[in-house]
Image (cartoon, rainbow, N blue to C red; front, side, top):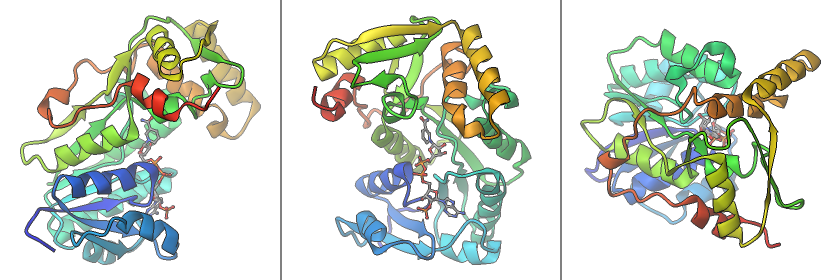
Length: 301
Ligand SMILES: NC(=O)c1ccc[n+]([C@@H]2O[C@H](COP(=O)([O-])OP(=O)(O)OC[C@H]3O[C@@H](n4cnc5c(N)ncnc54)[C@H](OP(=O)(O)O)[C@@H]3O)[C@@H](O)[C@H]2O)c1
């Protein structure tokens, strides 16, 4: 390892965590990346390619005893968590990781928040964000906690949310089409996270957005980026969306079936909208526009 600051990343084999590892290496850090025992060679080599002497893979799981996890954290000054999972990971696992970070002598902790403004929401608004709020409320530590918020990923807005149907050529939305929404790509969220982790003065909640767009502007960007004409469909008001969430919640025991709608409600009501952005803190990060993202990723017509 070199004398660059060492940053520990949990969730390094994940969508965002892998990008955070890459961004930290690009920005000159040394990285200790946590991989779970049994991780495939394919996943490991995706992380270690291109090879760099500043990346070390360390084995462990957030459910390991804190003493063992502390050994994995090693000499890292900052511990970043980009894990995903249920409350056993987000609440209990991250609390265990924080204890391990303290034992190892780390100074800063970045929890796996990476969301819309969870500080403005109520616990019942979105159960996945509720776990992150619960983890934050239970956190007592002498470490500096840096919470990175990015709005919604471009990748999620054009995929998982179910708003864009490329086959039918439609973009659907609930609520006011002119309500501004905070949106950022996964790589740009990773670049901002790495910049914050390497910024000795970073602390508290930091809010970033690649673009702030209304659904009308989102639709325009999709058309410009794809070169296609897409129909913008209005599905109902924000109150209609709330009623649809309640209807689905009553019909299933599996909240993952309607969590995308919960995210949309938090966004289209403006309740989880950032009041300000911290992008200017890291001018070295030039976020991609949604139009450019769509140009690179939209399926051919
Ligand atoms: N704002 C948005 O639009 C948005 C969208 C998606 C995600 N996110 C947030 O971004 C963060 C990362 O999500 P993601 O989509 O990148 O997740 P992901 O691809 O599912 O990856 C999850 C990572 O967590 C690791 N993990 C799970 N349980 C663990 C445990 N017990 N011990 C150690 N590692 C464990 C996984 O390891 P294995 O590979 O071994 O399973 C994997 O590396 C989350 O906070 C998520 O909510 C935000």
